[in-house]
Image 1: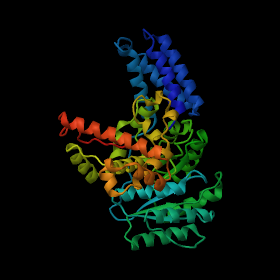
Image 2: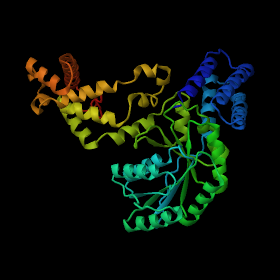
Image 3: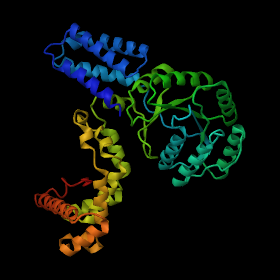
Image 4: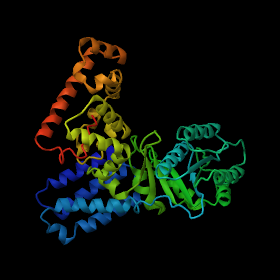
Length: 443
C-alpha cells in the first residue's frame, strides 16, 4: 500500500539521517525534497505547502538543533504532522438507540461502493450487529445482482425488490429491515461516471427520505486529486459524515489519502485494501502515518492475527507444544489460519523495516501453499498423526492423490520432521511453559 510514496520518503529521510550535523540548510533541502515527493504523489498543492511549512517551523526549533539525535526528532515531527494531516482518530459506526441505524453509501460509478457495502456488512456482523443490505441503484442492473450475490455469500439479508424509484426502495428497505430485526441498514446508491445534477438531486431526495445517520463517501484511491475534487462537490450537496478510500492495494500514489480529509474536513473512516470481502480496515491516522514512513503497523498486524486465529484451537496447540507433540493435523490448521490473514506480501508492510526489502521477491507462492495443503489433505488421519509410517508406497499414493510429485511430498516431510525436532528440543530446554506460549506455527 502506497509503496512508491513510502520508498521515496524513506530515501529523503535516509539522507537526513546521514548528516553529521543538522542545519537550517539541510533541513530546507529535506523539506524541498519532501514537498516534491508529495506533489509527485498528487497531493493537493495547498495541503503539501501547509504541511511543509508546519514541519519546517517545528524542525527549526532550538530543541531540535540542540538534540543529540536531531534527525530522529525531525522524523518524529514529520510523523506527528502526517498523523494530523490524515485526519482525526478512528470513529466507528455509531449505533442509534432505536434501530435501524441507516448508513447511506455514495460515490461515483466504479469507485467500489457496492463491494464496500458488503465489506461493511461483514465488518458489522463480526462485531455482533445484524446488518441489512439494500440497493437503490436502479440504473446498473448488475449492481443489484452483485450486492445480492455478496449478501448471500455472507448470509446477510438483502432487499429483493424490482423497483425503479430509489425513494420507494429506501422506504421499503427501512420497513423490511425493521421486520427482520436488523439493526443496521446499509443503503447502496447509484453513481455516474461523472457528477451531474440529476444524480445529486436523486441522492438529496434519498437522504431526505431515508434520513441516514451516516453518509459515507466512497473514493477511488487510485484517482488522486480527482477523488478530492469529487468529494468536495458531494460534501457541498450531501454533507457526508466520513470517507472510504478503496483500491489502496494497487499502485495508488497517495494523493487522495493525504489530501481528502484536510480538504473536506471529514475523517477517513475505512480503507479497502483488496477485492475480498474481508479486505477492509478501520482507518487509524497514526498507524497509516507509521506505515507511510516505513515504520510498520504492529498493532493492526496483531488485530489481524487475533481475528484470524481460533482461540480455542490456539489453546489446544499450546498444550500439544508443551508436551512436544505436533502433527500434520496441527500443521494444516496453522496453514489455514495463516491464509485467513491474507497474502504474505500484504502482511509484510505491517512489520517495521520490511519496506526496505524486495517485497516482490518475497511474495509467497500461492501454488506452493495449495500444494502443501493438498498433500496433507491426501494423507489418512493415521498418517497425519504418525508421519513416520509414510513409506515409499504411501508417498507415491499421497503424491498421486494430491496431484503433486513424490519429490514435493519428500520435501514437505523433511521440513516437518525438522520442525518436530526443534519443538522437542525447545521442550527439553524448559520453554514449555513460557517460550511456547502463544507460538503460532503458520508456515
